[in-house]
Length: 130
Image 1 (cartoon, rainbow, N blue to C red):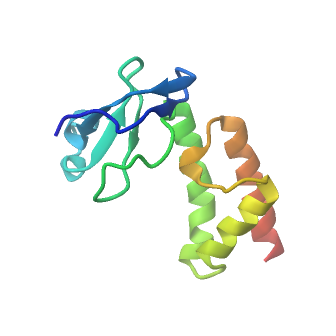
Image 2: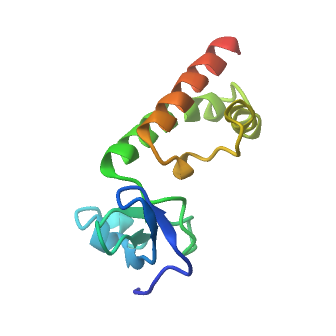
């Protein structure tokens, strides 16, 4: 599978929209056979990448730096158990975050570690309040 993104994708490291290469998990994670069939968009300038929604070539969000990817994973590690364990409905949790932030929240759209820290703090507050 080769190709280009259907439209520009914002690359955090480059600080601009880029037309990206469509590649497989085999190129991104050559050591992970279980990811070979997944689709990713890779920035042609810096090499950073973003995954695609399962079964599609639609990017999950903006292309993060490795540091931002780690920060997003920490947000998910705090956020996901709340809805996965039935403590709060997923839609309700994301609506609470969106309302508090003033925009429709999606982790894959975060563009800075500061945004991730803000969301992490909000999730901690929500967890404490419920």
